Image 1 (cartoon, one colour):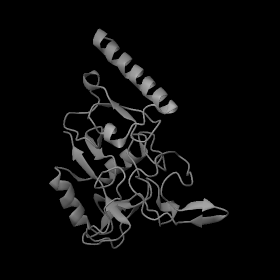
Image 2 (tube, rainbow, N blue to C red):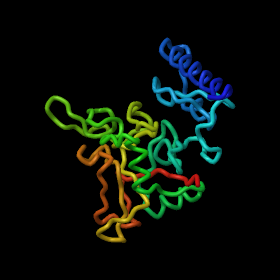
Image 3 (cartoon, rainbow, N blue to C red):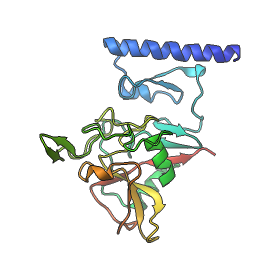
Image 4 (cartoon, one colour):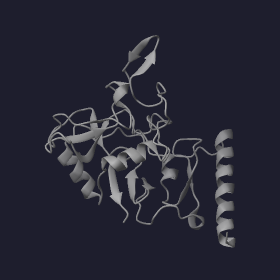
Amino acid sequence: MTRMARIQRLVRYTLNTLTRQLLIIGLWPLTHAVAEAGICAAYSPVADGGMIKISDFCGAQSPAVDAGMVQIDDFAIDRYAFPNRFGEPPRVWVSWYEAQALCQEQGKRLCTGREWRLAAGGTEDFLYGYAAEFESSRCNTPYYRDGVWKRDYGLAASGEFRTCRSPFGVHDMIGNVWEWTADTAPESTDWRVVRGGSWFNSVNMARIDVEYSRFLTPDYRLDLIGFRCCKDLR
């Protein structure tokens, strides 16, 4: 390991440790604005959006990655569902055509199913994104209480369920709203694929291995379907 690499590693460790301690004792309430202050950041799982800019001492993300996106292999994905803003509800009642156009306006595109699943489940391919086992109320899905499955949360703002994030730090990929992907259904090229489940549908659909497409034509709209964007880094 080179001298510079040792310095970078020490700085990352020191800043992460300091950030965690300040968060724990309440002296540094990191906000989403701080989290997106720069592309180069060290992620802390202590609090939502818990990141601190460390300037020249890191370089994990490509310069081509926009603020608010997470780099994964050769692509980047929005941290939240469109409009990709912490504290705002996802855009719904949007067709596949409209979702694709809105991504393209930002120099992005809809995610493929492969990209979506990797971003949601991590390299471990966790079935529920955050873990291999379902945890009631971890994400905005129907939840089990007093022997009954309930679904009374409704549409939530992005990031409201603070621990509903993937191993890569991508939020709300399970539940809240279904998300359009770039994929077409194997049964019909006229149908488009959504993933992730919603606050309303069965938790059996709120898994990374589930996709739905039946009768979902590109001009279809629903208050349970949103989207997020991806970007090529090649």
